[in-house]
Amino acid sequence: MPSDDPLDRIQLPRWRDQVQRTSGWGGVLLCDPAHFDVVDEKNTFMAGQIGRIDRRLARHQWQGLVDTYRRLDVAVHILPGEQDLEDMVFCANGVTVLPRVDGGADVVPSHMNHPSRQAEVQVVTHWLAQHGLDVVELPADCGHLEGHGDVAVIPGRRLALGGYGGRSELSALQALSRCCDHPIVPLAMVGSPFYHLDTCLAVLDEDTVLVHASAFLGEALETLGVLFPRVIEADPEEAELHLAVNVHALASGAVLHPAQATRTARRLADAGYEAVPVDVSEFHRSGGSVFCMRLDVPELPLAPREP
Ligand code: ARG
Image 1 (spheres, rainbow, N blue to C red):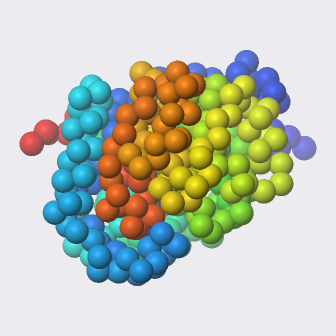
Image 2 (cartoon, rainbow, N blue to C red; image 1 turned 30 degrees about the vertical axis):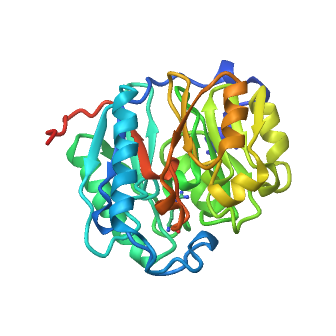
């Protein structure tokens, strides 16, 4: 019987010959931090941080991230924040955006673990749909999926990596893959404190990943070695203390990284990347950094009106 898992059509060592190319990203979406806060403890980074956010500093740091993207010629779209959605600033989690070969993308609303975060999903999805992207719903009973917290797209290619064992479930990654007919390589993770794939892995380009190796289980590291000729290890202490792996790589070779992760930045620079530090330490108190504070989006069919 032919399998319905798109991954079965690929032999991993030869994926470059077998996986289609997609056009690059058109920009990033960021969510205004007006309502950002820590009101509970969803991950270990949040322990002891309730009520400790300096709102003015958070806004200043967020604006620094926006300015950095603009300086690097990346189009920035801004989603307004909403009252009581204190985690929506991590707008990479509410949806998965999978680029298609025709230049469009499928937007798949997440199935979040926490009810407060579930309310964000409709807001982000609505914004993307309003700007012309297609929405594909997962089956209601497929399990939890937290968007690009756990799904890392290989830039320019129709192949993604999916982490499970933290917030997202293998069943949901498989459902995502089938719904969008998009191959996703599953990677088993240890879980807490590395509760999302983006706390322990970043795809820098189609040949390179940045990882925190001890966060993976089973064959995950071996699989990464088969997929990528270059595996860069983050400084382990920085991965744990400063979210060093939560970086955002641009097609230009620039990698925006948490400013505190200086040893990891050196490794990136030694590998030929332009390491661009961004200080978003107030957001680390909530367990997120650069990567989860922005969502890669394709060219939007219906351009947003810039303020
Ligand atoms: N407080 C948020 C949560 O625990 C942080 C999410 C950060 N996102 C990330 N992908 N690491 O859900």
